[in-house]
Amino acid sequence: MAEQIKKIKIIFTTDVHGNYFPYDFRHERWGKGSLQRVHAFVAKAVQENPNTLLIDGGDMLQGEPTAYYFNYISKYKRHRVADICNYIGYDCGVIGNHDIETGHEIFDKFVKECTFPILGANVINTETGEPYFQPYKIFYRQGLKIAVIGFLTPAIPHWIPKAIWKGMRFEDIKESAQKWMKIVREEETPDFVIGLMHSGMDEGIQTEEYRENAVRETTEAVEGFDLILYGHDHSNNIEEITTLKGNNVLCINPGCYAYSVAVVDIDFCVDDNGKILNHETNASINYIGTLHNLHSESFKRHFAYPFHEVKRFATEKIGTFLNRVDVTEAYFGSSAYIDLIQSLQIKISGADISFTAPLFFNAAIEAGDIKVSNLFDLYRFEDHLYTLRLSGLEIKNYLEMSYASWTQQMHSENDNMLLISPMKSNPDRMGFKNFIFNFDSAAGINYEVDVTKPEGEKVTILSKKDGTPFYMDEFYTVAMTAYRANGGGELLTKGASISKKDIDSRIVNVSEHDIRYYLLQYIKELGTINPQAQGHWRFVPEDWVEKATMREKEILFGASNSGKQD
Figure (cartoon, rainbow, N blue to C red):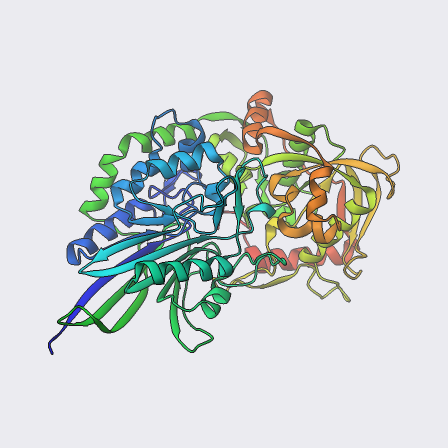
């Protein structure tokens, strides 16, 4: 009996986060990656093998001035990002948590205007009990039947206000995958099944109801997947996972920002009757950061007008800073960067106290003209501002958890003050052991953080900002981001010991617009700003802290401590 080989190619992107053009609008320079370069790669690949599937892993709609402009500023009838994805020729995608974050008006429009399906089997419409998004898609290539089933991390309620995802609930990925695998295998009888997951490999938020990052758990427990394409955790990875029954499943993540694409080449050996005898899979992660060809030129010409629209928006002058604002100072005490955000949050909300954290590892804004693009270095996400009621003890315990993830206990002046370790993505460089976006400090109170003390005993609140007493048993209004107010980072739930179901009863108000919108208006209103550290909190003992700061700035940021975006 004769045999033949049928070749299928799969190209996978994920976590593009607004990188549609190979231009860094925040710093006004040409950048790496982008959907323009994805198009250049894919168009060439399709010429070589037309039996190609192009798939995206979610978080397409958020992250750069481009996404913000196309989501909230652009007045076009159609969503420009849908047009871009259609032009490139995506075959399917999955919804991401940051796509949901844009709100129904945005993501529903995007999904409707894409000419390919956006999947999400475990996102359930609460009115119908059926999936809100298409659960899976069947493709036919060379007579082979390929199924793609999509899943979204179910941790949405920990990050995003309920009003934004109204009408939805999110099922555990493993449980949903067991259900949909049975349906797809029995009703569709596909030759090959791909799991498309906007969920990281493992770790992340874990509750009794679900796991944020469930790729490993799901792959091991759910038989039937032939390939897993995943994202969300921004970590490029190729890994084979063995199921409980001993089958090996390839899992691949090309990382974020469209710097690279994953390529999976599958050779199916079939007999004369089309029956698959076996298949071989080869996978690679291909860097496309500088790729340029005639296809990238055609993309550039086709989307020249929206590109220049975003550029005009991003380069608009809105004010002047009289001194440099550097994120790196925020790790070592009160800083101009953080205190500017804190002052804005208190002004918007009228709260007694404000919490916020750094959102970039080492961004900086130089003294001089401030443009719209600079706001994306000051504030990374489209987060609304929440005001909650917290007791003095809850505020202290919240801060204790924050500083415990940020600093270690020093036993001598030669010990490290900050919790640092080699970066996962670059082991030759040092970074923070924990996520910097959970390094919350407070404004509206005067306090000290003693780095010689153990976890839970570091923070001493001295007084309110005006010098009047701060009481552990009194309640105060506290401004924080929507992410934090919904339990993100667990500082409210584990730190302040407020149960997730009780958070809603603590909410006093929610801002109408996102924080970056108010920051833009604030700078426009003042015109000229001289950002300064308020000095309302500090690490102690000062002599140990001073020496540790000098050492660790050198370790983390180098001798120049340039503060440039990493």
